[in-house]
Length: 72
Image (tube, rainbow, N blue to C red; front, side, top):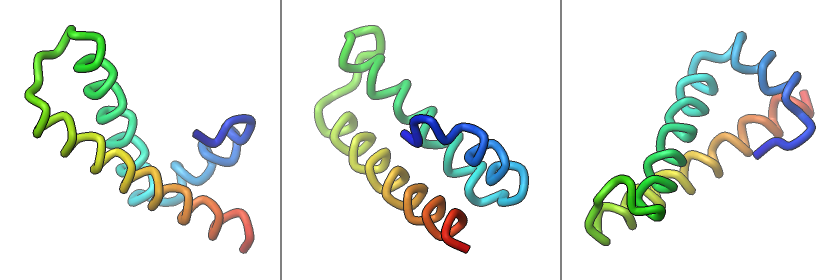
């Protein structure tokens, strides 16, 4: 996510607490989903599906926030 835009992401994380919090939550969700898919974190299908939906919602919100920041 945000490939090649790490400087802008870092700057936004410094000035926007909501973005920082959501970015860290997305990163945590991504690790949980990856671990579950690799079998290192046992989760039932319902929980895994919920995590994936939450991760996607976080990504969508982060993308909107990032685009608003870049275009203003």
